[in-house]
Length: 321
Ligand code: AVJ
Image 1 (cartoon, protein in one colour):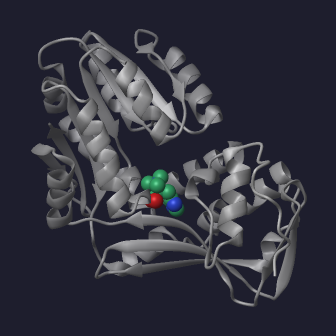
Image 2 (cartoon, protein in one colour):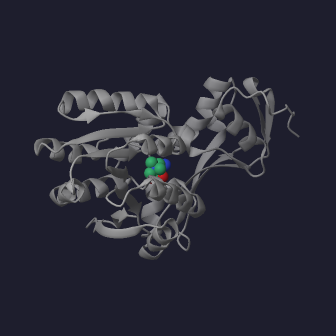
């Protein structure tokens, strides 16, 4: 049994979520906590791996369609280009460069949970694309909604990389619906959706041989160690990926290789693991047309355009309210 500590003295959202996630059954932790300085670097490594095809697919779509996308976005004049989960902005820079080259009047508002990623993105844009106006905003997707609401210009909202896939359908509908409610008739929502495909391809994308994805997954434990004074032995956990081709849901787990007890000093908590007990850490949902149309309908959005990558099935879809 776990020690109990009255759950009223948490000093951060992280503490609180770790406490409730690791005292729940089955155990779980949120993938939003993968992203600190080390996690950002690991994710950049993942994006550079050929097995993680998502980045290349979306890059190809943006590169091949940048003129058409530019025309679509210009619409009736100046706009704010608001990006949820901007990360290193590698793909978005294709559009930023295109807009900047054509002297389009817009402001780029990158939003990310990682302060580190945002700072790097900001300084790289200042250097590479000095003419682009940038207004970075640090926060979760939920906090991003407030920022979207504060922007008074016409809005183009980018939600790339199949980041939506970290949300279960109910959360995705809820989130897209909240965005829809903040949109004006002229505004657009531009999203990336990784498609259902050969299950082997998906497993390879989330279980690379070099162990980068494993390190990325375990980074949430590393953060608990350093930020909450815990003693997780990362070697005693196994990265495990499952993909259900029926539902299109990929799930990541950390599996305890042995029976063990972990101490988290800042939470005054001892967490017992049975041998082979799991911590569920991430979902990466894969989509098909039926699911995307259903999400859009539920969220009160109408799809106006879609782009598909040639090599592997990945789509970018444009919605209006
Ligand atoms: C950034 C959420 C889109 O789920 O594919 C990559 C994160 N996790 N490898 C994804 C991730 C493991 C990624 N997203």
